[in-house]
Figure 1 (cartoon, rainbow, N blue to C red):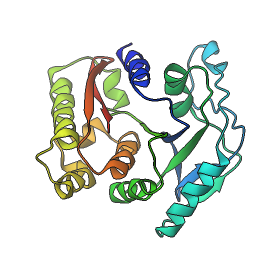
Figure 2 (figure 1 turned 180 degrees about the vertical axis):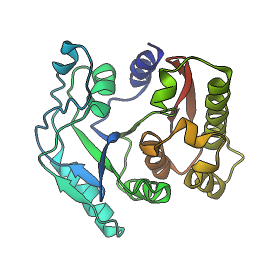
Figure 3 (figure 1 turned 90 degrees about the vertical axis):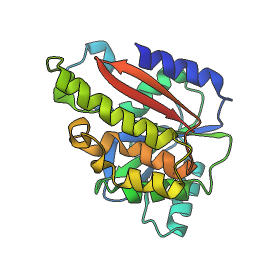
Figure 4 (figure 1 turned 30 degrees about the vertical axis):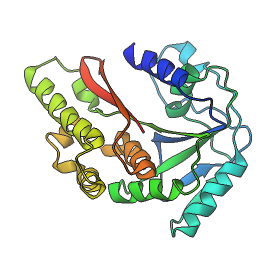
Length: 240
């Protein structure tokens, strides 16, 4: 699968991080919540898959100190966050990281989305995290640039293809176009629903918002992007 190959090859181009902060599309809370346990378990938050998919192991340790540092920075910036020492890692973390870093020897923490799904607030979340980010911390937004599950399993039609590709074209331009000011880029992402066929591609936006957090950290055009085809739908990956 092209996505798994790209995860693997991308990891090979990076210096090995001292820790990983992952924003998962599969975790929402009323306020930003950070895993702070030392040895998080795995949450098999999917159904209908082969039995072996429920025996996947990824024994990465947590990083309570990093979790506390992020919590304090968010609090300093007026963001009402919380720590969760009990929650484990969901598949938004262990699926890509098992491919990228199969040794599971890098401490990991997860950050939830806010269940208000407010794009501006998720960008601000990233802006706050940027104040403690360093070259040794890898920040991953684990979501999907196209997430209409009904369309994934529908007959492939020209209408679906046109809508999918129009939104992807808009998203690529928004994230990569260096001619845009950061004010313009921010406004586009905050008002993403105005993009072509936005609500067709994201009937619910939880899989798009990890990108908003990552952009908030970087506040610049992405350094690279990659286009993929997944279940005959166009999708994209962004690297800052």
